[in-house]
Length: 234
Image (tube, rainbow, N blue to C red; front, side, top):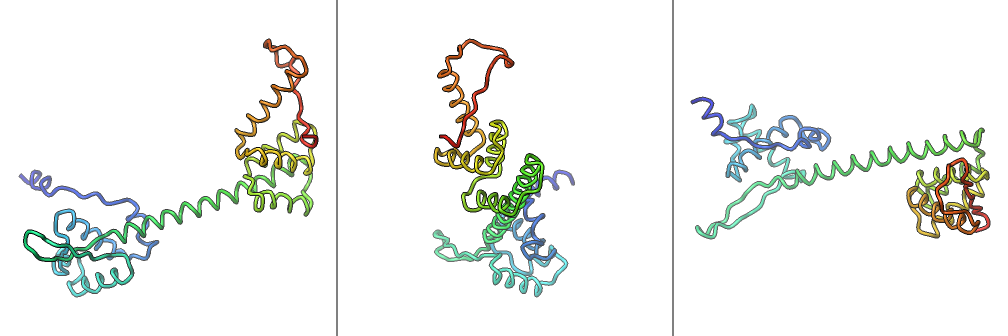
């Protein structure tokens, strides 16, 4: 019988974001529990529980409940709507937790933006490290500035810049002027990803093979001469 009574009480789903982020959005432990209790009341059909009803489920007094409810409304975390009962011809008030969900969503967006900035910083730092590794020396101030211009002003992604670096290495022309020309050509042709750059290069090499009169028959890698695109002459 006790188990049946337990099950008849039902259950309420509480968003993990509330439990993970309530402190971040400025809620105390008690205020978070108040929101959970409000959620339970609303889910059960009581859209406007009184401070006394709330206090019966918490360790705070009804006076403290009233104070917290006013505070949450004033801080824009709890909303109050007015509805009309058309059958009875009366209006009634109801709490809405939508402002809380909106604030949690904003918090999630902020976290994602911060993570994107962190990832971007890590990728950019990786660009500097890999350039110095390929050049075999520290980059000069002018070269460092050129990298920043590519990323900040030209809006070239770190991945695409590293792809251009690889292309310059394969072409045997490891210098910033050559890499800048590669990026310029890719931007002019609407290429924004390493995958698109690879496809663009492969199409060119196929044309070069055809022009050079090489057979289309499959050959071993050791027999196949890879044409190199001179970006400075494009």
